[in-house]
Length: 99
Image 1 (tube, rainbow, N blue to C red):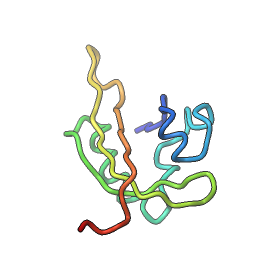
Image 2: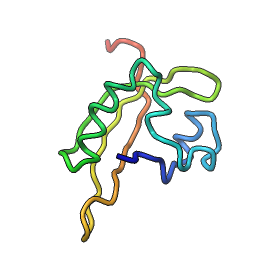
Image 3: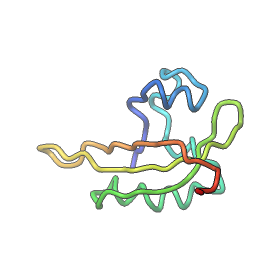
């Protein structure tokens, strides 16, 4: 399962502190802190292999070393010839408790 980044929007690039061009073609799991990578792959890999969409909570590493908590959703992209990859949407999670 390849799981490499093909496109990043400006908001994600800003959250990670890197230009969009630097993020293209890197493995998505390389953005996740080592301690969380197994759990991340346990959610992402089955979707990339044709499984159902999934939601997950994890964190990503910003360029300055900051760990940014995120909520993600992943959904496979199916085409005429089968799987063509997936879309992953990440949003920053609040670290403050809900009132």
